Length: 455
Image 1 (cartoon, rainbow, N blue to C red):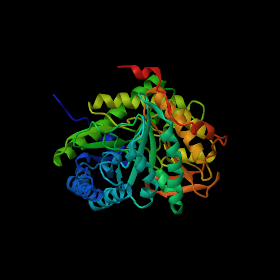
Image 2: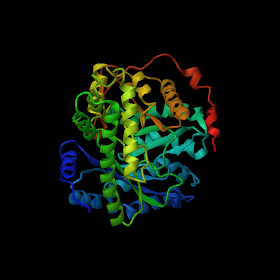
Image 3: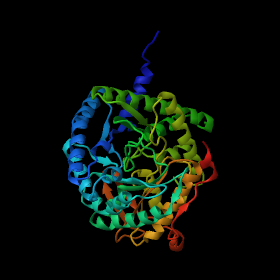
């Protein structure tokens, strides 16, 4: 005999109303492979028509579900096939034109971001890949809703250091071309190792080559819920008991997200894709991954023990989520973006959290060096060195990791950048100023580790 547990209902209500549980994003993932054509204008028309056809009801349906279930749905987004693959069919490359088309389509259907203006170059670049990478800064300057990602490394292929060198320059230029907005172009650009093709979160979302024609992917979030759960535990609770509590909460968060996602997919007559159960923070007070560390007993994010706390958190979230759904995907873990997390912003501002400590933490988290503002005079080669280090962590550990740094134009340590909204704000963090130039300019490919031969 089944029954409704009143305590569970009240707990879920508190999770939503008090502790910031929400559906962080519903992302329509859409293949554009059938939009190829020798004429870039025709490609643009096909892309615009396909997006506006499939996504015409995305926002209204999300609003309807939100009202019906009383669960906030914060973002409505679209991810597409890496545009380097689509635009490469053209006789003449004009990726900036395609970026504008994507931006126009996004505006028409009312979504806040489109992901997929990117390339997969972990083993090498085609002519189309190079043309797209070189177009990224101008494309991000001329659009509002476009996000770009480039996968430059994998555990199977190694690290494409030619692409890493090029991306250092690209990030630098993207920031410079948007200097009037604190370099926001770089905030919408990310380099990946082992990128997943079903990630619904920006800026790294795209529709992978092995994915279906379309799918609805869901990203949930609830760092405030996890923190409240930990704080409810009795004094002296050990880590085993704490991990079990986190798993229980992750199960409930994932179940809520899958309920919403499947219902919305059914109403839109779309396949349900995956649920990404990442703990994605916001600048709102109480919605912070750094706050979870404090609830665990650390004075602040960055204290010795932070990496261990993050490792346990990430693992428990994944274990709890996988028991609630057979379609967990994307990144699924804990995000540590500096500018998008009130606690991380505070820790970085106070000097509790250093760049090197953040790099150490990426060895156990789900994303990497994320939304970190660095001095505007940082060289492109130094940025490439930062990327290379982070790609090595992902490659060796067979995990997804990434770099999204903002070399803030005309800003130095002690200043800050302000983007507003979910992108938040961040202090300019000091970085190592020793030169990486001779190293990163060697080019070629850092070979994959021996475990790449597992097959």
